[in-house]
Length: 435
Image (cartoon, rainbow, N blue to C red; front, side, top):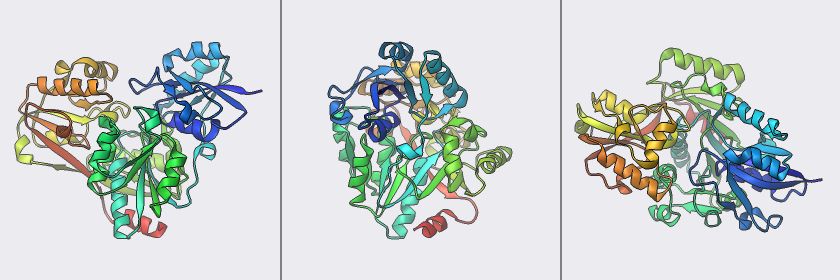
């Protein structure tokens, strides 16, 4: 008898788990997806073109808040948790809810969800959102350039648009960002790679993506999202930690699993963190992983025009997911503003629409504005919030230049950040040995 299943997700891991394990599995009937974290996902369908011949009408996506009544309505046997960066207490609350409704609660592991590549795979993952995966991936790319290796980057999914048009996406130019109607979050991940001349793949069906990527690369670089596990079986698994959030490396799902699997662990942001917090992170790494090599790095901050922000009244705009999913109250822009002795204004009183709701939902946010832009409407609300703010200048601490997509009525300065090793360089040595 088929087991009836609901997959809980956030438009990424949930679709992947379905594709690789459930889509052609006659022992299961996936009756629904539920969606959380990402706006405007629920109410859609996982289309028949992706769902396969066993699901000719596709599969409906419901709000996660509907989960209890969905379990009852469909007489569900099993609920699969398939999204990332959740505190352990939150995971167990979800488990208790599902169990109280009569269903089993499952978290799938690498054996059933990781695809094997014909080429070598380097994965860059983390224990939390906002540890510095993207800058690390770019550093790995530079090393492979020096070694004259052909590679492509495959990015963790962010399919927030028409799923049928996002089965396989290939980004090599700025025109590709417009072609796929990328959100701000997507642009933040893809644009820095495009600037450096890297080819990036993303989408929905990661087996199809892998097979196409293998045709033009000797090495596949998995650029992870949040603190999720890689979709591809890594030959070298690099995992980042963040001493600004000590203890999180062993208290968030599935970040600790990444840490336990790691071949190389990076303690990033080591120049701006407290010594005792760095030691706490190191202790926790060794508590769960005795074999991994540990290296220390800084997320080096570079200000575009430092003289423009010195002692000025500023609005700081930071990377959205780092502040929301990652629960940070500040980022690189805020650190740069503090060093330049800026008067940092509070953006909350200028926030409008969905941006105002973000501040209500995430009370951890400090005096920084998260660059939320999951839809054209939200981008307009972000623009209105920025333009309402009474300040001398805007500090852009996001991975992309927001001025390209938002018209600002005041000057702005970009903050960039890159990975820099502290002490003897080990990352290049490790990758050379791996290659």
